[in-house]
Amino acid sequence: KTIWGMLSTNILANMKLLFVMLLMNIFYAGSPTFMKLASVELEPFEIVYLRHTLALLAFLPFFLMSPKKKIAWGDFFKIMLAAFLSFTFSSIFQIIGMKFSTAADGSFIMAMEPILIIFLAVIFLKEYFEPKMLGGLVLALIGFMALSGDALASNHLSNDRWIGNLLFLMAVLAEAAFPIFLKPLLSRYSPLV
Image (cartoon, rainbow, N blue to C red; front, top):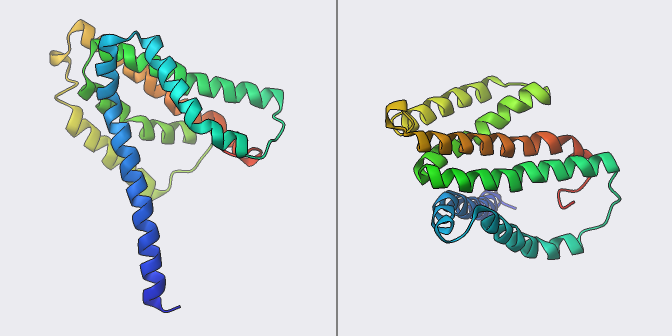
């Protein structure tokens, strides 16, 4: 192959990946707004039940087609705990938080998740901070503070909004626990488990 042929193949593959990432971010970014709208008509537990039932139906074919592997009881408990924290507990807290706060506040707080995951990975998984990563974290924190500083300032928070934002923060902690709990298991099990 020529260099141009290899480059154009990589560009095409990268464009597909970027498109999928963009699509996922659009869905993720719309989640607080959809939850806020749904919370007008449905109770938090109903929203979580519907959301998880739809996810189950979407992923069931992949699970049924994946190779089966016996899961050790301790690992099964870790998977269930991580799933409960990240999906059920976090979703319920996000939806209840949405009733007290705003979708914008929730989005800003939820944007802290990758930063929190990195800190938890350093603490619990003994992962190493590379200088570029540390610089990126500092920039991300500065960006987060610049974008959310006014929205989350204490003089703009009513008592109910403060409670909603605290619930969002608890949801972020629960979601950040997911990769921390499960990363050690990836060496033994497929991600489809």
